Image 1 (spheres, rainbow, N blue to C red):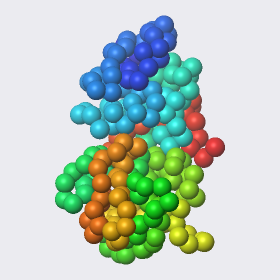
Image 2: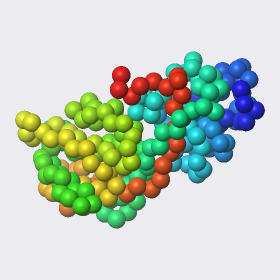
Image 3: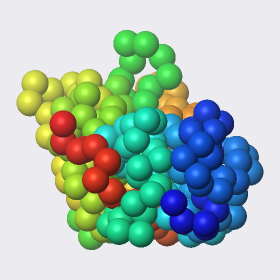
Length: 239
């Protein structure tokens, strides 16, 4: 393996496996990401932590889901050994704000959903240039390509290959028999709550980020990119 050190976040056991294979390893955590040129991130939470931290490392996702073309834990040494020939896949990051206040950075998805069971609200979605739709539903998910194989897929959205800022808009349990799903640019997109019938909670990459008041908007703006390594050990996002 290369003498260049590789950071490891998310699972010390993977770091031990890399050391046994001859790699120089710098251990880190989701709160303290190593400042190395290459970082192995184990699990979805670790990938996101590395993505939003300072620096621009090449990230090797391990056991982190289809959307980021993970490698299996046992394949991590081979993946790191082959990084010199890796293809780089770029995934966008988005700043999320509500009522004009920043609430987080998304790599995977943003979800607005009614906090009470059996309650629905009404949502309006607009891109920077067009009105997408208005619908009554339990909520709505905006998923990036990295997030598209996750919750958005379970509620009927397609799985996307990375392509700029394109993402999926998927209503959650909409009050209609044949709901639309849209594939649009998420950069500049906004979602507003149009009826004051229930509390709407906002989640950014699965973490609660506050509530959305009636007639307030959630806005999405591209803020950067994370570079992910694709090697022969990387799994398909479509299988």
